[in-house]
Amino acid sequence: MARDSTMGRDRVLVVPNTGIALNSSSSSQITAPADISQQILELQKEQELEKQKLWHAFQEKNKELEMQHRQQLEHKFQELRDQRIAEEAAQQRERREREAIKRKEKHECCANASSEVKQKLQVRGYACGVVTSVVPCGNLIKRVIHMNLQ
Image (cartoon, rainbow, N blue to C red; front, top):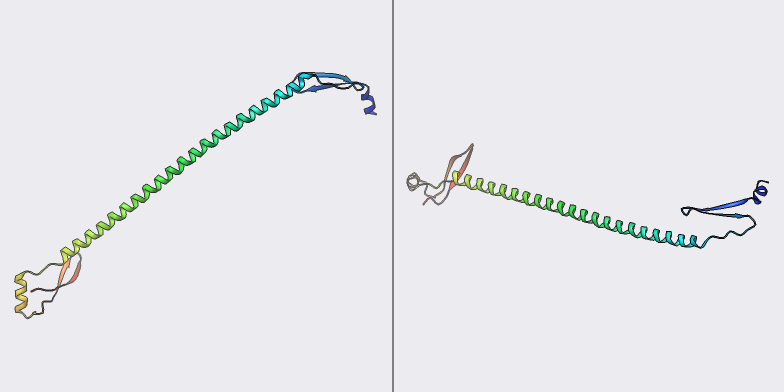
């Protein structure tokens, strides 16, 4: 019954954002003014322009983020390269120090017998030319064999 009671009344059609209201009775045919079609086209154009602006802004932001990411990767790569170079330099320094210590120990602990010592040894019967002696080297005592005393 509620439907029947509203059938005889006038209806109002409101188009959003246009401010246009169309009055018509239920018996008359609803006709839209020609400028509504024009407004729809303008809205579609505005939407398309807004869509293009958003797409352009997205592309710009994407490029910016890619550049930031590339810079971060390059920075991290440089840090890793510098770290590797520093580690290699430290390893070389340690290796040189160990070699220097070995040379120093060898130089300090292994002495050649003087000609005077060689003569005394030969007189005492060490004609083979091999002498075994204990030579202090730092905190260690090493057994040193001197060969070819002659």
